[in-house]
Length: 250
Image (cartoon, rainbow, N blue to C red; front, side, top):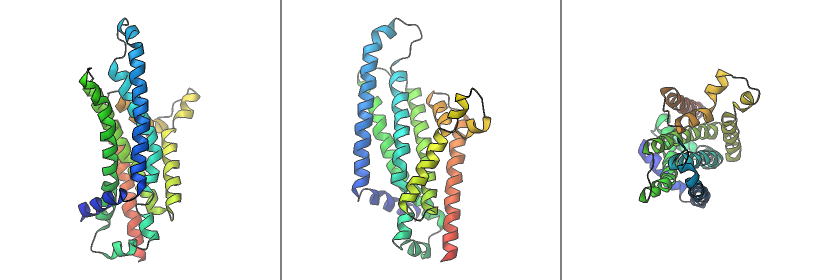
């Protein structure tokens, strides 16, 4: 049943023009940024060749590309997740879903995997850009893998927050605004600390951007990976709890 819900959710995303429009705009923007970075590397290559320990092709192109993708997905994810539960509630179909012989865990995980399928498609399309360089250049595949892993963990966390907000909000617009606000807060959480030349271990640990950048650098630590896994599991559990309350009220 879980896979049935996930498959239905994934297909429903492409029944409306939103998913197609987001995919097209996302690819256009990131392709432009990718080609800009390639052109910058081509211009700087003669100078970099004479510098010992200078950044290579992978350093100049891959981290900026995946970093920009993370920022854009921060803006896009609220639009994709806002209808997951909210729309079911507004269309009065949530009651039918809750009355069916399906557990809340299956419903939440099915919805989550459905939206995650679209996210994985986006990441795959992004990854094809730097991989195209293998036709005429060499890449640090280890650092490329680290960036793919970092973006994958990031969108997992984004989708989990969006799903939770869709569970507790009464309207998709409110869910989208709440998701964006929380993601933005977690993204800029330790900026003010850095500006004052002070350190806050709590803000540093809670900052989603810091963990993402740590993985992007190629230093994959259990602290950063466990942060994203714990973060995702927490909001999925909160979503299940919220749906439990809805079932009890029916």
